[in-house]
Amino acid sequence: MKYYLAPMEGITGYVYRNAYAKSFHNIDKYFTPFIVPNESTSLKTKEFKDLLPENNKGLNIVPQILTNDAEGFIFTCKKLKSIGYDEVNLNLGCPSSIVVSKNRGSGFLAKREELDYFLNEIYKIGNMKISIKTRIGKDNPEEFYELINIYNKYPLEELIIHPRTQKDFYSNEPNLDIFKDALSLSKHSICYNGDIFTVEDHDNIKKLFPTVDKMMLGRGILANPGLMHEIKNNSLINKEMLEGFHEEIFQKYREFFGDDKYALFRMKELWGYMIYIFSSSKAYSMEIKKSQNIDEYNEAVSKLLKEQEIVAGAGLFSKHD
Image (cartoon, rainbow, N blue to C red):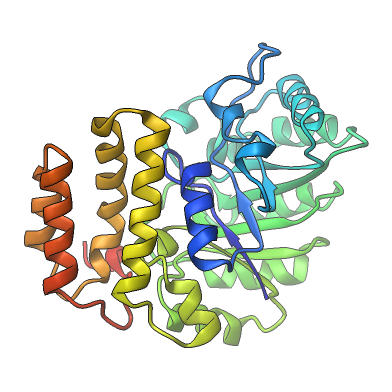
């Protein structure tokens, strides 16, 4: 089984990826937060800084592109090729209303004639492998049957499927009936993505779909950085491992931003996921959120690690909302 880290905008940049890899060593491909094509030839933008080889040493990186403009996609591929990339991923999954309003991400799925034309243009690129990360439709699951006919026309590197519609956002359960159909209908290698928060979730997908040999995890890993350790080694992450990961990423954020205020903001965002792996979290979460400086933050985190335990089956934050 191959395991991928899903792109999470604002969180899974190279600081997170490197800290995660140093602590856990268990991801086969890292997909980057999406970049939006622009006309600049510069590689010094924030998005391209995240992709520079020197910031991703030893990691298998696949840049993700968000656009509905074929010319912009191709131009971006050329820029990525110039710094050593030979594979990119097209984002047809982002459910954000802002993205969808521009007919990008999962919003593009409703424009199937335009999508077909777009894919016809970008797959003329001869020196770049292109995979697709998709939802099963914009408004209803039945849209997928038209979409898969479109995808089958082109030489996809692989097809990563999150079996929800854009309208679902992250509510409702993943539509596993549609995913089952995808496995039989697709001409391409399929990767499963969606709601893998625990070892049990992972094992259920393996049991239901024994031919699936690739899974992409996102929110589950953010909530429980030790999830892959549990899946591969049947061993719960301990507080020492979590503390080491936390210290690594926190210090790297402080270096990256050069301003503790921004580092704290990013860590608080991450704790919005990780807090749920502890036996009791609400009061500690508030303390972390209220911290205004490094000392207050460190005290709040230290108190959490000292007084609470990591629990088996952790990471189900979405199901506690």
